[in-house]
Amino acid sequence: MSKRMKTILVWVGAAILGFALIQIAILTGWITRYYEMTLMLILINIMLAVGLNLIVGISGQLSLGHAGFMAIGAYTTGIVTKMMPNLGGFALGILGGVVLSGIVAYIVGIPTLRLKGDYLAIATLGVGEIIRITILNLDITNGARGLSGIPKLATWYYAYIVALLIILVAANYVNSSPGRATISVREDEIAAESLGINTKKYKMIAFMIGTMTAAVAGSFHATYYQLIVPSQFDFVRSIDILIMVVLGGMGSLTGSIFAAVFLGLLNHFLADYGAFRVILYAIALILVMIFKPSGLFGRKEIKASKLFNWKKKEASRS
Amino acid sequence: MSSFMQQVINGLSLGSIYALIALGYTMVYGIIKLINFAHGEIFMIGAFVGYATIQFLNVGLVPALIVAMAASALLGVIIERVAYRPLRKSSRITALITAIGVSYLIQNGMIQWVGPNVRPFPQVLSNVRYDLGLFSISSIQLIIFGTAIVLMVALQLIVHRTKMGKAMRAVSMDPEAAQLMGINVNHVISFTFMLGSALAGAGGVLVGLFYNTINPMMGFLPGLKAFIAAVLGGIGIIPGAMLGGVLIGLTETMVVAYGDSLLRDAVVFVILILILLVRPSGILGKTTKEKV
Image 1 (cartoon, each protein chain N blue to C red):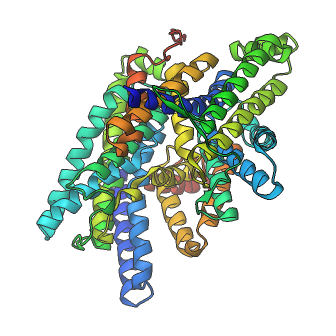
Image 2: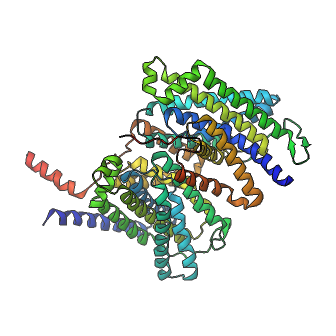
Image 3: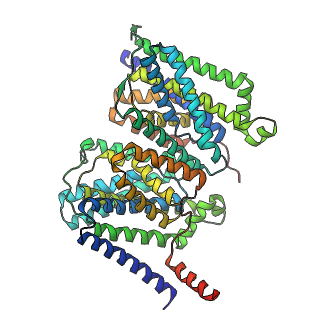
């Protein structure tokens, strides 16, 4: 069997195993309905963190407006599924959210992605706020009261499959030719440009993929929690996602996934502490930045292909 | 016409507060090229210290202002020393994320400590309105203008007439060359944080007077708007921050008066994106070519 096939098999196996374990845990009552909410939050956070990592970690553009794009997906799906309360409506809502989010990202990206570093961060923060304020002022989104009574269509297994798909897209993008070009933009924009890489194009591709996945996450948020209000998608939410990416390691997709799971569980157990929890996060963020700015995983990935390399090394050693 | 003049006066008083906060952003950015996200929180702490001084020590406005400025200055220096100095050599994204962390820490620390609820700011002076025909001006607005002008003149004197000011300008031009000339760069950076934070603290007390209320979340939006003001005027340029602050204050007041008050924050962000597109170096800034 080729190494590529083996790698794919390991991943598929791990995905099925994870699915089976969660399913068994739910059937045996180990994961109660309350825990299922945490599971759902973790899955949504994985989608968000992996998407943001494409923007921040892979293309090196700090975006502080991720929650705005999540809001676009949430509201599109919320509005569509209220009119079509079935799975067709759900799929249509996700699709609509993704397309709309992509269009907004494209329009916003043309001017803002020209900016560098801190300016881009502030501009994307502004974009996120503008999206939120627009939603607040529209009639179709019901202003500050938000949308309630959205049909509950999202289940954890849909979210699990979609999160896997997003990881698959992101991982394949990173290892593709455009992905390599995007990484070169992160490493040195001027050097990349002088090698003939269209830096604007690759920054835009990463930005659009990232924002589209945020829209998908928003769709799941809307159809699981059934209530969406603009204040759920404010700057604080964007920072929450950024914290996952930074803690896991900017540029490491597996790092983002681990951070999303870890922080999701931590959130669950510290839910009663409110501001204290955020204080802990803030201190953790500062300490990580000072002592290990690359995050817990750095830019390393856990790869199935490495597993075989490692075995080979062991074999050659003995 | 008279109502328009009235709005101009209101806009100018809000704008001078933004200008005071923007000065801190612009000075810090000028020297270490960092957007000090925690600056808005320093401003909030200034407001709370001013509140506590008036409420519990029963003093007048001027002592409260001085205490608030001193406390904010100290906080600014501590933040720089603890969180930013170890990162002097790291990438700007790292420093920016740390700044966000510090901002989060202070804001939520205050929420934990004093509670998230809104408090009324004690009214230390009776608010008299003076009618001047075309417009009227309140004593609080006069205090705001007075304080802002005195502090800005003082800042100009410090930056242009003192040895420390000269050192600040030298470090903002080229930190390494300044160090070679015998300037203690760390001292200069601490001093810059001190000055900027003191101004933010004063701004905090003035906002307390202006809006009558304070809460631990009050630092975020004014902080962002002041940053946008600094970018609008040309970041790193001290007169630019004053100009930008006044312009943002006027715009916001006009949007509330003649447009939709719900859009007041969105308009400011649109200004930011427009200015970054058309003239990223700001109104008073000079465009510099990027060197490889």
